[in-house]
Amino acid sequence: MEKKVLREVVKYLKLDKVKIDSDKDTVAVEAKGKRTSGFVCGTLALVRTFGPHLEGTTHLERTLTHSWLTYFSTRLFHCASLEALGSCLHHVNKELENRAFLCGFSLTIADVVLFLTLHPFVTTWSFMHKEQYQNLSRWFKTVQSDERFSATHSPVQFSRTALYGGSVRVH
Image 1 (cartoon, rainbow, N blue to C red):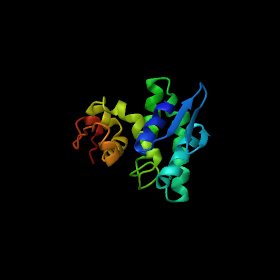
Image 2: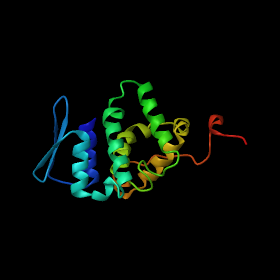
Image 3: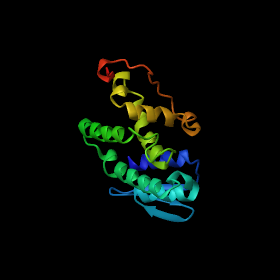
């Protein structure tokens, strides 16, 4: 999964002459003559070279970016069951409760990686499934409007109206 996502990150950043390879334990990225091992380090090396603003603009955003990339690499990419995936998605959904993006109020490479990872799955979700992850769905809808994604990824439709009784709260 890490190698596939890194290839997608390279496309998103519109890079060429980047080599990505892997053995059974780790992935490596080579760009501009520098070789970096590991998903998190490789992703950050690409971002720092070709799009530093995507790492975050404050110390907190950069720390959150590193944390999310580590979470994806150690947990999300290695879900062995639907239950494990559901647990990861619930965690992300909860974290997006009070934020527009994973690391605050602007897009970072963590958002890019999560979008690239989830897009194949979210395209198959029913409206009911999307409602189970309201914050994640809101985030996804926002991120998919990024021009780099809209040019390369099919849009996912979301309903603005609650369709199922489980999502509606009566006050």
